[in-house]
Length: 212
Image 1 (cartoon, rainbow, N blue to C red):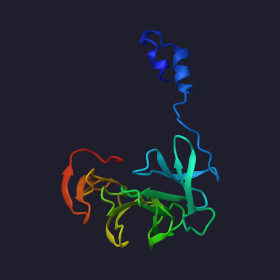
Image 2 (cartoon, helix red, strand yellow):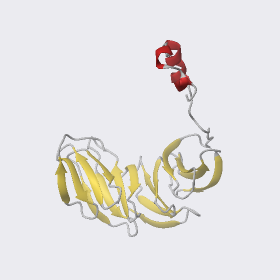
Image 3 (tube, rainbow, N blue to C red):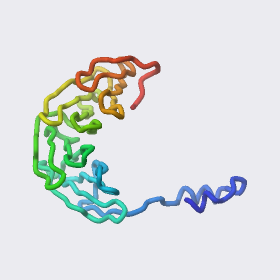
């Protein structure tokens, strides 16, 4: 792609656009066994490090540029059909693991050896996210039984549920950069900034519902 972009704009014909569409900017090809990844997360403090959650519940840690396997362990999920979802804490020390396809709860494990630190009951997981200091875990729950997705904020040290939102409205959310607030987008109540620890609204934002 770098070479293609050196071509002057007036010379970029249909052949140029075809080549651009066929170009590959990948820096590495990673072979997985089994060859299906259900969730990826960067490894903080490990340059180029990537955590990969695979079918069957295996967690692999890979050097993305070389494809080198750094380590791996089982996520402690009983079914071979599991579709795990993961997030790694900002300090790179812990990994949170949920399940897309069954209410198998959430668990926190040590990245260094896979030992379980904590496990608690929780709904099926669509995605997970730690806040900036790793003290909170945002779970976006999978929609089930025709109900929209909801969110839950957990204390990552104890597994205590701090607050939740939705349904009836479909909810999307993300932490603010400092991790002290959550930006919540709800089809029922619009776009809001709330306190990350109790979910209380700090202010409402103008505009329509968005996937944040």
